[in-house]
Length: 126
Image 1 (cartoon, rainbow, N blue to C red):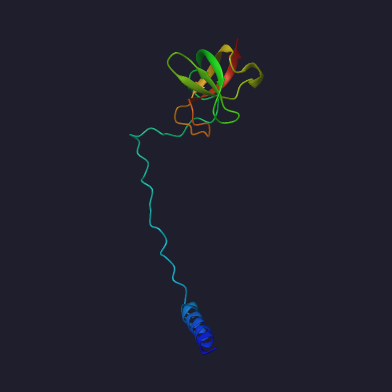
Image 2: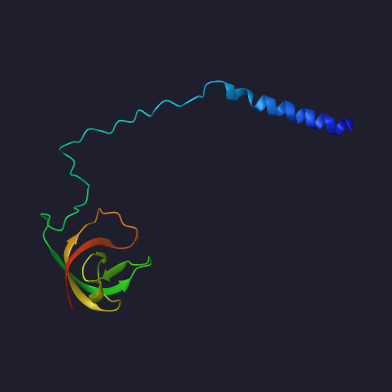
């Protein structure tokens, strides 16, 4: 019985010690002092074009359509390159078809497909 009483008393004492720090003012870390570098006119912007009507010329690419490893990702493979097709008529982009797509490569664009060079499709031809 004395042993149980010591355990309970010890637990209360530890609980009381653990709560001692809760009455003081909270300690907060100072805000980060990260300042982004000033833009330089020597460095071109890495931001991808978000509009199809950009000044970039349209490119034509002919290859075979295949499904990507991620759901909804459509790829066009050529002898030299694999493109991730963004936009365009999905009905005409069936896996196994050989076709020509017209659009704009967007190599700096980030996607969730994790395959191929992103390519904004404006037109599809069989």
